[in-house]
Length: 373
Image: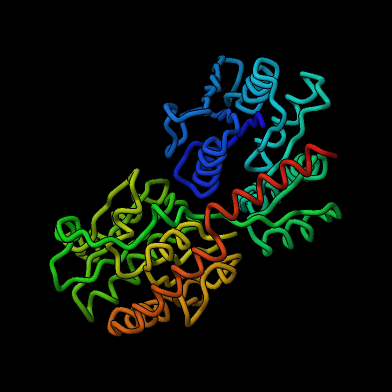
């Protein structure tokens, strides 16, 4: 198949999954074309069967905001025609699916099919804004195929947008061969002393991720036992988080790793993963931690209960309940047998329910189904 993938090139879950999906599809001998405003964070163009097409947005004085949606549609139409694409897979309803629909109209090629994957923010935040509601609803209802990353998100989408069309639930996935527990004494020694526990958080530092709550939870943990906090990622809440670390005098115990390419290396040496988000439609970072046999303490929101098994691979606490999260974390960190049991079960869940091999196979089957109709 010749497949075009439209996604954000950032470290957020949607961009990571879109990139990993494209890489896996290319390894299965499909021709994959990424269409983005920047090279996706986890992508290398040296990979076989992968092509990258830059969306160049020109800023004119007339435009208050650069018209990215139009530039994306134009570039997508160009790639469809030049490379004879059979399928466009847009990750996010707005703006990516909307741009794909416009590109489809531009080329007038009815044989090109459009599939959109809903990841969460496009539905729960952007899509429900009155400024974008109608275009989001249109983009969802006029696809040849539509998927959501969790049962929760599919249900919310149907309810909020009064949609009757079928939404196929295809969850996010993890490469369980790459995300594994590691015995790397030198790397561990780089971040912590032998008696310290390593607690990790990964996100795009948006307000939804509640990164300051990670720090507040860690502060309570650190009162009870020696620990280090590793914060991976960057974004709007970085400044606020840094200020909080300084105010709590945690500079010597908290390390900001910013954007890290090989997050699996740090997860592989971690003892606990914290994800106190206000909303998660799936929780890819939690899944990657589980694949590395790292217990997870997260908020009981959105699609996270479909990933984390409370009392088996970690704990889920009410969103914003820092006291409960810190208590759950201490239970795990102070009980070696519990930690090992949770880690083992998390790995099992990742391998059985969310492996890359199985989920990419589901996407392939869905592509063929859409193309045959």
